[in-house]
Length: 153
Image (cartoon, rainbow, N blue to C red):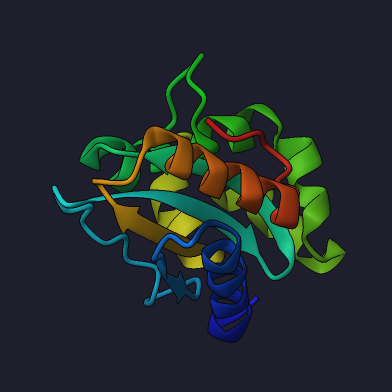
């Protein structure tokens, strides 16, 4: 995945809906810095590694947009929780020579730093003035196109 592929997704969504959409691809590591979701925006976020998408979700609030999916919380539909609860399946999406290191590094306490260092993020934003249906369609469109391992929400 790269910014050019993200731009193709934006163009396809806009062509289908007529709704202006912006998006940015944040490569894992130092570029993985969630933006602030402004009062004038709502959006869909994507977490992935290379071509494997783990989570597609939507938000109209800053906590869900910026931080919830980086924190482990038992019983919550958060990316960090899904990873820890399914760690033995999760590691199979990475090269065999990296799996032991992942098991050693990834804990409930380290999920935030690990996700930022090892997973990329894409942020798709539309105007807060667009309907909730437009946001739901953007999320559904991206789930259809990217087929996430963990469901949206």
